[in-house]
Image (cartoon, rainbow, N blue to C red):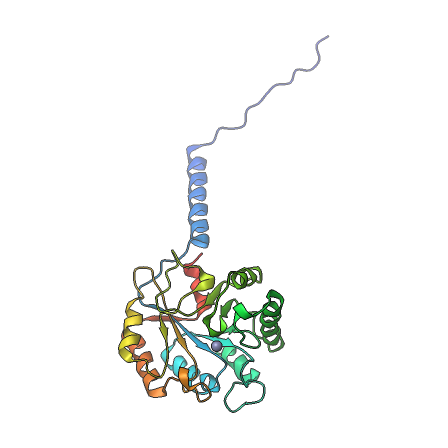
Length: 262
Ligand SMILES: [Zn+2]
C-alpha cells in the first residue's frame, strides 16, 4: 500500500508591492548606518581652544568670556607646579568641576606635569590615572583628551593613551591639524599664546582652518602670573576671541572633534 503523499506547496510569491517595501527598507537602513558611522565634513573655520596648567584665571576670567561668545574649550588639568599649595594662582577642584558643569571639557595634563619622555611607562600610567581618579571624585567624566606636558611626545605615551581610551592628545608645533594625515594622539597646535604673540599671528593661525584642516589653539593663564613666559594679557585675548566671533568660526572643545573623525 502507498502511504500518504507529501505535497509541496510553494510560498506565495512576493507581490510587487511587498518587493518595493523591502527595497525601501533596505535603502533606509543603508542611509541610517551611513549617518551613524560616517564622519561629518570638517567645516572651514573650525577652531579648538585649549587651556593648560589649571591656572585660576581660566575659571575667573576665560570661562565667562567664552560663555559670552558661546565658544567651547578644553581645560587641561594638572596638579603639577604649585597647584596643591597655591590656591591664589591655581584652580581648586571645585572650580574645575564648575567648568565641566558649564559645558567645557576637562582634559588630562597628568598629575605632576613631567615630560613623558623622562618617565617610565608605569610612572606615566600612574600620573594619567591620578587625574582620572580626581575627576571621578568630583563628578567629572573620565577625560578623552590629553595634553603632553612641555609638549614632549613618545611612541610609548601614544600607545598608553590609546590603551586607556584617549581619543585626542595635543602636542606643540605650529601648524593646523589635518585629520587625513595627522595622528589624533599627536595633534599639533596652530597657535601657542605667548606674551610676544600678536593678533596677526593669531589671525594667520585661524586662516589655516580650511580645506579639512582644523586650528587648535593653545593658551595658559589669561593672565598667567606664575608662568610669565606663557602669559596672555586679557586685552589681547579679548581681541583674539573677537576675531573668532567676527570670522564666524565654529569654536569647540577637543572632544567635539569626534564627530568629524569617525
Ligand atoms: Zn603644561
